[in-house]
Image (tube, rainbow, N blue to C red; front, side, top):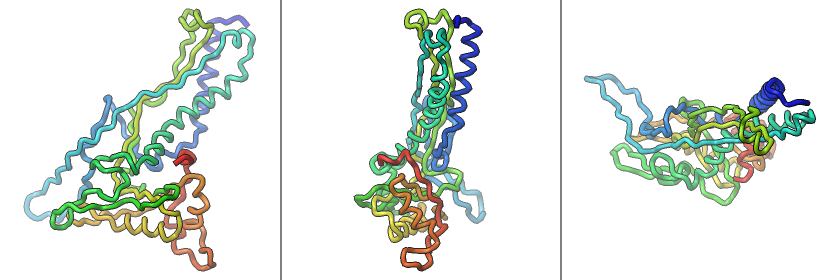
Length: 299
C-alpha cells in the first residue's frame, strides 16, 4: 500500500475511533467517591473546606457565616500516553493489530482518573488534608460547644487490609477530582513530520491535565480493623454521630462501603446478606452499597 495523505487521514479516523471506543468501555468508579471540580488555572485553592453552612433562626440582622480560611491547594499535573505506528505496517497493510491496542490506550487514559483517586484514598492514613492532619486520623481539630478545640477521629486503627465507609450523596464527596483539561487525542502523522522522516514512525497520543485531593474528612471513615459486623458498626456510629464546630450535628449518613477485591466477600456478608451467619436477621443488610475497587488491590 502506498502511504498517502488520504491513507493517513483514514488511518487517523480509524485509530481515533478505536481510542474513543476504549474510553467508553472503561468502567470508571472515581466519581462515586469524588466530586469533579473544573479548573481554569495551574492550581485551585480550597479555602472554604472545613465549614459546612448551617441554617439559623433569623433574629435581628443576618449573621454572615464566614468560611474558614485554609490554604489547601491542588496543583494540576500533566498526563500523557503516546503510541507509534511503523510506516512499514501501513505499507504492508498490517494494521489489524493496532485497533485493540488503541482501544487499550483509551481505557488506560480513562482509568488514570481511577488510579489517581483511589491511590490517594489508600494514602489517606498518611497524607494530610485541609486541616493539616492526615485525611484518616484520630486528631482532627473540632470546636466543642464552648469553643474549645477537641480531637475527633475518622479512623479505626488495626493491622488488617484497609476498607472505607463513606457518605457520597451530598454536594461535596470525600475526595476531589480537579479537571483542568480532559483527555484529548492528537496525532503527528504528516509525511513531513520529523518523527516520520527520522524514524519512519507515525505518532499518536493523548494528554490531559488534572489532579486529585481530599474533600471533607467527616464524610469518610478509614478502617484497618478486620471487616466484620462489629467494626462496621463502629465506623457507622462514628460517622452518624459526627459533630461539627460548636457541637452542631452534621447529619451524615454513610451509604457506600468501599473495599478492595480481597474484602468483597466480607463486605457482602455485612451489608448484602439478609441473614447473619447464625441464621438470624442481619441488622446491617441494605445499610450501604458495596463498591469493589480493583484499583485498591495493592492497598
